[in-house]
Image (tube, rainbow, N blue to C red; front, side, top):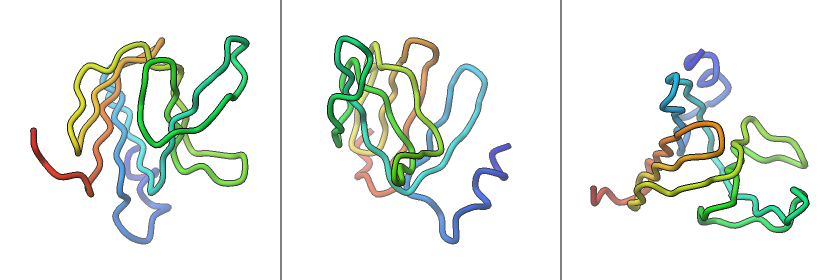
Length: 102
């Protein structure tokens, strides 16, 4: 499944999102984090993670390749990695453009 997701890129993608629970991997060149209002409706998008936000991979005119449920905990954050827990799973986001300090 990982190779199938990678086939759609002409060059190596910037981001790699790994679901720790089952090893599912998704790649993306662009991401953002969605903030939801109390009714579960879109409120705003952000460049940084925070509790209550969902990550969206490769957003394009209202569609996307992957979106998580809301973040409940940011376990560890470095310039090139974010380990976070959502309502359903635990994920590791790796940014190949980040500066390794971990």
